[in-house]
Length: 161
Image 1 (cartoon, helix red, strand yellow):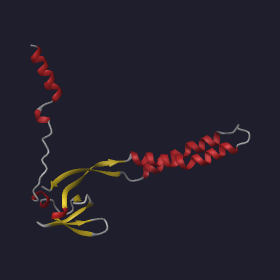
Image 2: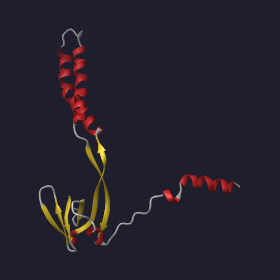
Image 3: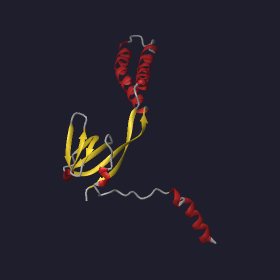
């Protein structure tokens, strides 16, 4: 009876086999790269660990024509070690809000510190505190107005055998 209970608990902890992720199979066949359509965002890793990012313009049996940020280049199949597809995985906005708040705090910290030191009587420090609190608030507001940052997930499509 104990064995059956232990087996049932182990089964609940591991989950159902239907919900398990299938093992990833990375192809060593160039046909997987040829199946990628034009405009697919990829990262190519070459022999000397050189990275190239861009969109596929065309793929042949001998090379990939890649549209990079500033140019169009042809990369020979013999030079490519790995091809990775970049898929959009969503957006991220909070990193820009936090960066804006940190920048606002850094910019207003120096004037607030100087105003704190210049005050002769030491009785009216409310303006200094407001200056220090207003900077991060304005920075966060500016950061939240910026467009969200695109986040990508990379999936390996081809590894050279």
